[in-house]
Image (tube, rainbow, N blue to C red):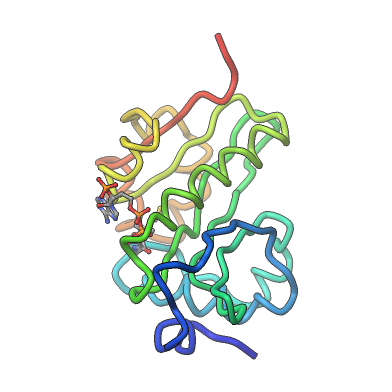
Length: 173
Ligand SMILES: CC(C)(COP(=O)(O)OP(=O)(O)OC[C@H]1O[C@@H](n2cnc3c(N)ncnc32)[C@H](O)[C@@H]1OP(=O)(O)O)[C@@H](O)C(=O)NCCC(=O)NCCS
């Protein structure tokens, strides 16, 4: 089964490969978990087991290389009918800088819009990426559900959130 290691060492990764975002499939699960977890030690993503990804597969989207290697992933974390977070945004180091991260953000927004969410938020250190994608700076304090859910898990993740929280309206008005 594919994994992030093969994603990063893939010699077929090409700058001309089409950047198509697709719904994740069962054969992507191990690669998604491995890619996401690559950045967890630095606090950039929260660790996600293959079991977690399996249980939430319908919320994940991926960009694959021409050989089906997962180059990037993103997910929605739905808190309530009116609140959703963009999470697990990760692009394999060898594929970064090609616009995949931005495509994944747009795809996550589109899926959230299709599901009827009025707004989407994200907690990230990638400030320019989110601002250039149309998000505005926000404050984690306006999302108490996020604070409540993660307070028991990671204090460092919360402290990051207080500094770098972004949100975007998905509905007019
Ligand atoms: C953040 C990340 C997803 C970006 O993926 P990517 O495919 O390299 O991003 P793109 O190629 O779409 O970059 C789009 C723009 O965002 C900028 N950008 C990319 N990563 C950035 C970062 N970490 N901080 C600030 N800006 C960033 C790029 O410079 C680019 O700007 P440009 O269009 O003016 O050149 C990727 O670096 C990654 O996986 N990082 C580790 C995990 C992480 O931080 N995830 C975010 C958690 S929400």
